Length: 149
Image (cartoon, rainbow, N blue to C red; front, side, top):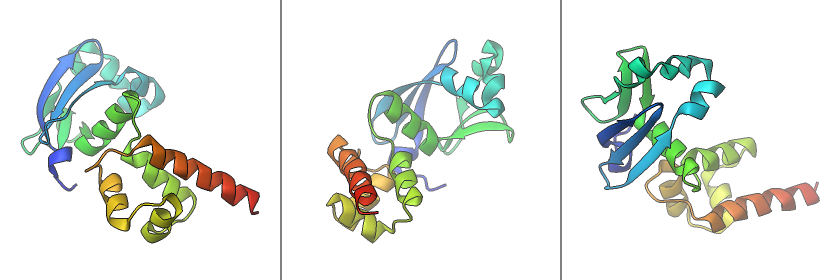
């Protein structure tokens, strides 16, 4: 995993029963409720145990929240994307999934939504927040593609 400032956790607060507050090296602090994910993904079901959940800590490099060494951890990049989505933003994984769904290269995707390839890369890496207008352009592109089929 690439440890960029926006994907490096510098502080963690556990908020029972199943929530975290994460502060990243770029200064952004985001709350994240993991309860919905513990129900959705069986691999995370153990986090429903308050005693286990309370042991959450950041690894020495800031790239993961760890509950059980080498067995239960979540990457900072995924946690940030999940927290951005919960806060009503557009997580970078959503944009990457959209590109994959439509087999778009970065150049094609940038052209489709009207941004430079450099800006698209900022969005994909999580270095810059994805504006809702860009996500709406993605959805509009999908509709136009369906109309042309």
